Length: 120
Image 1 (tube, rainbow, N blue to C red):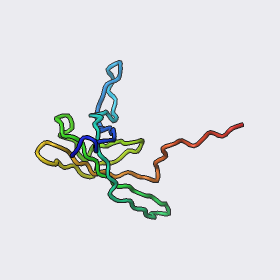
Image 2: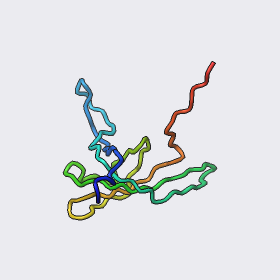
Image 3: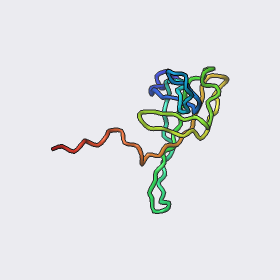
Image 4: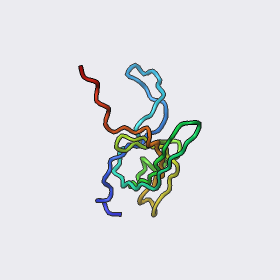
């Protein structure tokens, strides 16, 4: 893969225990890495369930392999351009060359630009 195709900055996150400034334990998402990635939208679906319409966007991301992200898995999540994705699958491409991440996001919840506040 050419380096020019890795044109998106993504954030790989893992749920875990961190510490605040007073060394108190805090559960939450911590950033594993912020690698460059390529992004390919695979499919989108819209369904009606329990009188609620929901849509899902499935996307594949490819990042360079590194020791820091070698154990990235389906319990983790990925954020790209303001949208948070749940990881569906992770596989190695080549021998420690790249990692392909298949992820799904609720696209009906995505709002890249906040609505303007009502004026006087």
